[in-house]
Image (cartoon, rainbow, N blue to C red; front, side, top):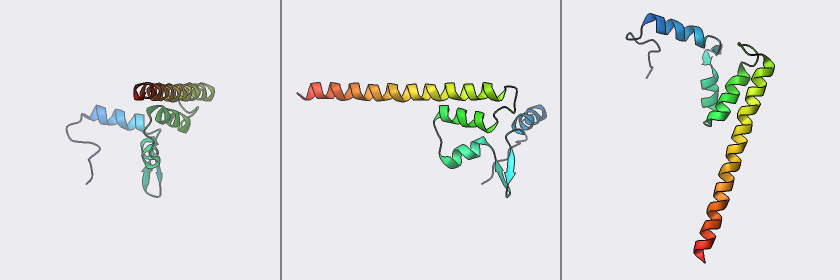
Length: 104
């Protein structure tokens, strides 16, 4: 089943705007449209922080921000992801300690 990317109900201004925004991310390879969303899907990347970092790296320095600014933003995003992993690990450790206390 194929979804019409340009339903008749969408105003022309909207579809034109979407085309102009998306053109920076659209590449064709052997007849397959490649964009960040296809790449994320193929690799099964579901973490929003990783998705953001990968999308930034794919277009690094080719938009309104400099290469340096994009890299710093990616680093900041991934540092936050590491913080979240540490927070999750600490919560799990605390939960294990709480379970050990109630088991006694």
